[in-house]
Image 1 (tube, rainbow, N blue to C red):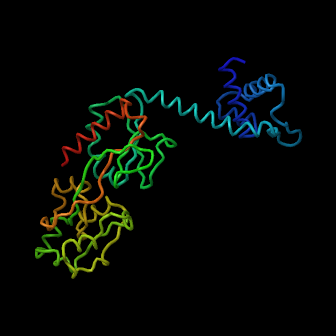
Image 2 (image 1 turned 135 degrees about the vertical axis):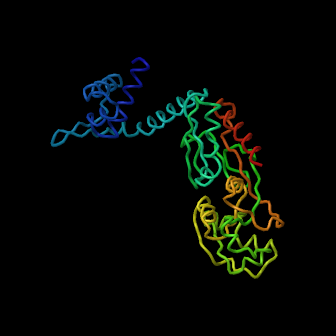
Image 3 (image 1 turned 180 degrees about the vertical axis):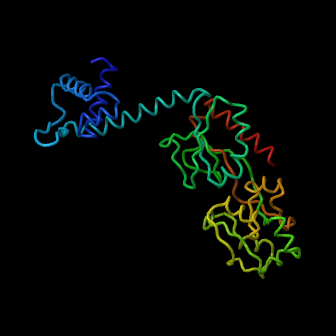
Length: 305
């Protein structure tokens, strides 16, 4: 059997075994049932053994033989590897899709407002954003590059620091106008605090308790206030005048620059133990579209400092 025909026959066999039907396999492969059947029969003739027990009553079902069942896991793994190899061939150009993973909040508050500048420079590269709070498997999910927040160490990935950040309270200009006696952190006592639950319980993530301790105040009850499980929504609640949020400078930079938020108590300095990192697989370091996006991220981060 010639190579391409052989692969087509193996594919027809695998899909038929999965569906236990030539008709359903034909629908997936976008060919006729007769074509699928012919490919499977040609494979059986070449092997000199049947691959299915054909049903004879009721709705005909294809039941793989014992030998076929033993072979199917290896065939499926082989097709997965072929698909991965094809995707690697496509990666060698700036054309096509670049898959980027970031958190939903980082996408909303920092990346998306800047993406137009990337598209202007590299119009031939389409970006697909994968926004998730969970750490994704770059190989299994076809991710090219990402930005993660943490200490800079993730298994199987190269990481490069993109941005450090400061931690400080923020509120809207309207809110501070209604509460103009805020001269020191102690003055937050009895005020509405907005808590970010999306980072709650993670070692190194800033909380109101941590900031108040650093500010040297014990008179503010950090247990009270509004709790929101999305960092972007926390800042929006502050913009809308619901209280004081504990901001991360990278997330809040555009709102501060636009005057939607005001930083409180700038004399209390706190650089987070965590930072933003560019992450990618080591074997992808020279891909043109990844290199372009990585360099653009670094430029944008420098502008935002």
